[in-house]
Image 1 (tube, rainbow, N blue to C red):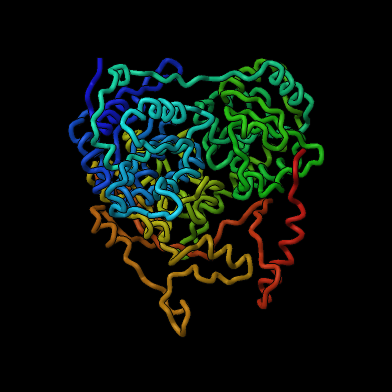
Image 2: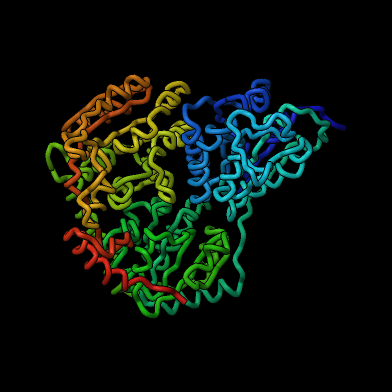
Length: 617
């Protein structure tokens, strides 16, 4: 039996019937489609969506933003659900490339359906087509290849019979997921074909909990028993695996302290007895000191980014060894580790059984307790500085943290806010801290907040965003109002790029090109540009207010909780009142020669610090 459908109709019919199952819970994998229509998809995917009201279509304002929204939705759903994104050929398609890169780098599943050039070629070059004198089989969509986990161009209707199952294999893989791109030529989308009816039957993709090799598990337990100063680094894989309870029990049983990556923050509640907080460049003193001394590092679901490893300077014990628990073999083998290729929850449960009776020494546990107590005092100090106005960024974080409820979600992505949030946010729920820090994409914050709210509408979402990121992609406020997904947005007005300004000064360049100032005497050194962010947000449909003090901020955020529409609260912050770094370093190369004395001085500090970088064999 067959069904005569267009290629686009068949794609949508197939997507509607895809489900995932883990631990006996079944979910429809695709929760709908974001899109902006143009001549490259309006008569194909657009027509197919129009006649499929049971597959919800969402109109967004920016193609990059819709991919961020889909990725945030998938991340909030522990990668068990996602959204589809469709665009026309040309700039609409290439606008999605940044979102695709962010999704793939963060190992988050999203499906992208960009329109493409004519497969039959006779009318080429079509509007928005990139011509190549070397090949007729190329378009701007080839740019998606390096940032997609799966890429294909559908030049004939029957090619989706083999392409779509491969798309699902990649999107539902815990190890290999990321962006999947199906480039759809605009003449192929509306072309009809007799598809086998079996293609459109319900299919459930089981997300397996893979178990590690028994010998590797035995050796891992042996290494842990032999270690005197072991440290766990919890990454995003702990949360995606829903292994937070298993980690909590394992840490309490063994006494091994836990430090968290950006993606792994929230793996333990901040007041857990073994929780040291953030790890690495944006880490806490206790986490970084114990990492420096550790003789065994147990990485759980982490890819060991440079921020986690402090540019390979974090682990200085000459005898340090690594045990890596990861569903991905690629990450499990990093740092010449003992690789335990397994689901995080399964591995932690089995390791706990293998380590019955084991516990770290009393002196080590006492150091962990002391570091934890000292850090809580430091967080209280920064949260309550009483600086300004303009107030400090750390104080803003403290106010938002206090106003938010335990199951609320804070979202951020770029600038100095992620580092300060990593250190200062007291996470009380595994899904309460949502940072896009694999790509650290400016503009992710509001669109990401929308995806989070769509995934779990019962939670309050607190979007924290600097003015630089806000100006790049604020327009999805309109989408949140359109769809009735209320966000609480806090805009920190620091008159430019605070994070890179600080980094520029640390490198001796004095903040060049990082402040919003009028041009004067040939340079951008005039008065500060005063942008009315509250008026801008109000024009997009939000309830908006500008405040100055911490008391006003607290009152405004408390009121925002009660509103039923997206609210924006704007507050000026002092870029010079910075949260310090603690016991860590980040490799940002400084100019080797310069006419500037400040750059030369920065280079003198850089060279010896770089010597601490290590290879692990």
